Length: 243
Image (cartoon, rainbow, N blue to C red; front, top):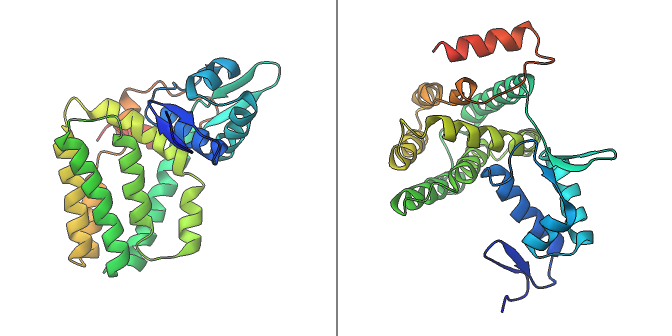
């Protein structure tokens, strides 16, 4: 029997923080691709699958709506968001600027933020050892949360959180596009190198390592609509795909 507030097998059991637990489960399903971009969400079916009431599910969906992961369409109901090329351009460019600021203010790193970054890498290494690729996007997002947290700047962290979950979707797409040429151990090793450079207090090397990461491999594989994309976004995509 499931304990209070404990999740087993993708279903929620117990009355404690049911909305938060349901939101966490649904968020993970979106970020790992178990719920596809654009997928229509039938409330009763999803509530039954997760193991919560429809009322709790609706509250959880409102949380994910604030995260930028689902949207409510009048007379059609809930669906997972779709991301466009314009979205990808805005999210990736902002991410890169925020990470530059994190390097400027957070490297050399203090012990506590560095420990969080190291813990994030250890989770990636453990998943690689277990040959479990499912949490790759979630682990990657937590690594970059820890990276942004290196300076312990609340406003920098808050700015990152405005794009964190859509960025996680792009990370999932990116992993899908790159997994044929990079194993889970190679993925973890790439982030271990970055963590070690942060630990060494080498901001220039950290920047070079960041620029070498294949963060936009999804552009060649994901079907992102170019509707609304301006010349800058189109030029950015062409340049990234030509690397």
